[in-house]
Structure formats: C-alpha cells, structure tokens
Amino acid sequence: MSSYRNPILPGFNPDPTILFHDGSYFIITSSFEYFPGLPVYESTDLVSWRLIGHVLTRPSQLHLRACEPSGGIFAPTLRYNQNDGLFYVTVCALHRMRAAVQGDSQPSPRGFYVTTKDLRGGQWSDPVYYDQLGIDQDLCFGSDGKTYLSVARSYPSDSARFNLGVFTTEIDLITGRSLRPAEFVRQSSTEVPIAEGPHLIEKDDYWYLFVAEGGTEMMHQEWVYRSQSGPYGPWEVGPAKDASGQGINPLVFNDTHREIRQTGHMDITRGGDGRWWAVFLGVRPQWETYGDCVESQLGRETFLAPLEWNEEGWPVVNSGQPISIKGLSSAQLPLAPPDYAKRFQFSPETDIFLDGWYQMRTPQCKFYSLTDRPGSIAIHGNGYTLENDESPAILLTKQLSFKAVFELDLDFAPENAGEEAGVAIWYSKWNSGRIGVVGVKSTNGQMGRELRIQLPDVKEVAPKIIKTPLLSTKDPIHLRIVAEPTRYHFEVAESGSTLKRVATMFSKGLTKTVPIPWLFVGTHFAIYCQGQGDQRCFAPAFFSNIEMRGSHD
Image (cartoon, rainbow, N blue to C red; front, side):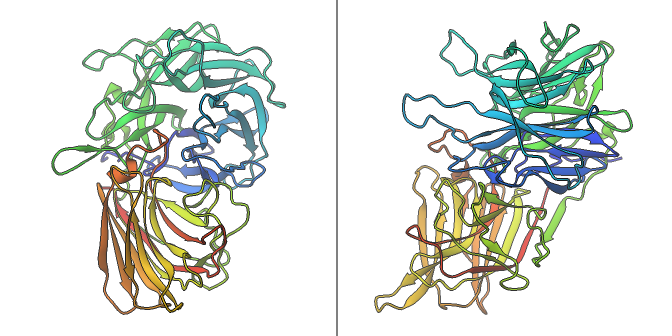
C-alpha cells in the first residue's frame, strides 16, 4: 500500500484532539475568532475526512465580542465518559491577547465543557464553567471514578521570562468546581519554559502525561511523562533521544526540517483494530526560488503518525523518525487524491456552515440570505468594516492548499459612496488582500463604481491601495484569486470581457509581524460586503458560481 499524505487536515486546523468511537475517528480543531466554533470531522480511514458539524453554534455557548485577532476558542479536548454515555469537549475562550492598557494585567480565561450524546449532528449543551483559570484544558475520566482537570498557566519563577506550566486537580463534574487546590505537576524540560496542551491518559499500570513544550514556534515539540502513583505524579521522564533517533523524548520535534516544522500539541487514540495513532499540529514552510524560507500562510495544520508502545511501556511516534509529508508505508493507510474541486451550491435548505463557511466572531444578527435570489448568496453589509474587532458581514472558507483557485460572479450596484463588496484572501485585519467593487460619486453627483484592490505591504502596517474605474455602473463582474505557494494573483473580468490580472501580492505580506506579534490563524478565502461611516450597506451583494479548487501536490 502506498504512503498516506500529511497533513490529513490541511489548511487552518490547529490543536487537534482525536477520539475513536463506533467505527469512526473524530477530530476537533481550534477555531479562534471564527464562528461557529470548533469544527468536528469524521473519518473511517484516517485520511479522508468530512466536516460533520460544529460544537459551539449559538451565543449561549460562545459570545465573542471585540475579540482580538487570534483570540477566541483554542486547544480543545474531546473525551467520552463511559459513566454517563456523554461526549465532552473542554476548552476556553480568550478574548484579549494583550493587556487593555500599559501596566494592566491580562486576565486568564475561564475554561468550560459542553456535552452531547451524538457526535454526528447532535446538539451540544450550554457550558459548565470551571473555577480554575488557564488555557488548554484537558479532562480525564479516571478508573477510580474521579474526574481530573488539567490546565496550563503561569507559575512563580525568579526569571522574568514568560512561562507556562501544567496544573492538575480533581473536579466535581456537575458543577465544574475543583475539589482540591490544583497541583503544579509539570514544567518544560526544554530551554523554553513553556509547557502547555496537556493530555492525561490512563493506560495499564501508568498515568501518562503528554505535554507540548518549547512554545508554539520553532522549538515546538511534544514530551511524555508517566507515573505509577497517580495523576499528580511524581513523574518519570521518558528517555531522551540520541542522534540516531533512539529514545523517547521528544516524541516529535522536527526542528529545522525542510517540509514540516513546529510539530507538537499531540493527542492520541486507539482504533478499532487495536492500533494507536497520534495527531498533532505542524507547519509547512514554503521556499522562494532563490532559496529563502517563507512562513506558511496556511497556518498550523493537523498531521498524523502511527504510535506504538515499546517493551518498557513508552509510546514511540512515527518509529522515532521526523514527521514528513510522505507518511510511513508501514502505517498501511490509503493515499487520498491530490486534487480537489468544490462548487458551492446555494438553496434555502443549504447549511452553509456544513459547507465550510465561517463568520467573524459571534454575529449579533443574520447578515446573509439564501432566498433573496435563487442560486446566489446575498450578503447585506452592516455598520462594521473588516478592520473592526467585531462581526462584519464576511463569510470565510479555509484555504486548503498552497496551489488553489477561488473564483465567483459578483453582482453589486452600490447606492452610496464607500459601499463595498468583493473577495479577499484573509489572514487578519492587518494582513489581508482583497479586491472589491466600491461605490464612488463623480463630480456631477452621479453614482459610479471603481475596482479597489487592497494589498498588505511586506514592511509597512498600512496596506497598498490600487483603484481602477469600472466601465459599467451595474453589470456583474467575475473575480478570481489564484494562489501559489508564496504569492497570490488577483484577476477580474467585466461583463463580456476576458479575465485580466490586475495585481499580485506576496504571502510574506500576510505573515509579517503586526501589533500583536503572534497570530495563530491561517488563510481563508472570503466574500464580504460593508457599509461606511457606521452605516449599513444599502445595496445587497449577490455572489454566485463560487468555485474553489486546488492540489495538495
């Protein structure tokens, strides 16, 4: 059998958690500021995955207001509780990435869990909140009948460096309250004092603690510890790997690997055939023709590797070898087709979120319609613009490959100057490229339209703006974004004309340093409509014939 291909969930799919149940594998990944929150994927073969729903779908579960870029929901844990027959997802929502004012403290998030009886389309409950603060919550249902909560948070240290360590406590599952003070159970074994993403797993005579260490950038890696005493330790450290890869820790660490880096934040599961598997995030750097390494704009993706237990009872991931695009043939997994194509269909019955569309933060009211014009999706721009930390009228779908095409027809006749609709390649409000139709008034007061292209500058915070008049004041136009590994091309065709390339941008403009020096998201293709001056757009934007296609080769 040929080797499978990594990543198994390409595009923006970080912090995976996995569970095998009822003949299928289920993965949930982080969603950050996007809504609905926490996509749920299902597969029977570990390589072909289908989006089957989302965990957080209503404001009573997730109410993101003024959430900063890369805030929101991240690092979930999915578990099944045999005692009550419920599936649990535990997670937290971080609304602010920085202190509100200089000298102020940044509040720690308060985690929670939600439950469902059915992973395949079941309704998830409202949250039950914990009284332990921190990030990267993990739930473990012990064989002793107790429920253990682990979190990552800062700990006292003589060093001024930012740190994170793992804390564990027992909780009352009904109320979420802790039953004892949390114990500081683990700090990083690396030179970077960050230990996060804990997963506590009980197997045979041991408790195993899986921890992401070294921070989520270049030093990111996964370590494992074990204890025969219980979930609070003391912990035995898995033997260190030598230069040949013999040993246990780190379980995965790709260092400066050419294909995949930043591997870590691992979760594991046992399949129906008894084999074990590990999923974890990773990043695929891209390379310019002159040899420079370029940060991946797709962000952190989900990777897979086989896991085996050695004679000493330690887990070994990927036979101790670095993670690569080409998975181990010994895993005996099929190879998914490299090419994909999707044409989005819109009818009154369409569930656009099962089709992979997302909104920015929790919308306060519905801004799209599937009935205004059959076969199209209409977006009614609200008073927020794409630069606002709120819920502007934008729908986004994940870019799934470095080589891709996203194109559509746009019918938009703005009624007022400044009203705008178009398509975008979206990373954050600071790092995005878009091409839109904008309403303009001529000197004689007549309404017209212009094509406005906004491109992120590689060095400057302010974007580059290109304006081009449109011949027609009302005819539909065709818009296309052509993605390559390190650049994007914007193309347009007015009614009856051929496509014309009007701009090119480099992916480095998307991943550049911004006021928040760390962004944990990835690129989306997007459609949007917005008003101006805190007013709604008085003309709807109709999008049709939307296609996305690409190749994973």
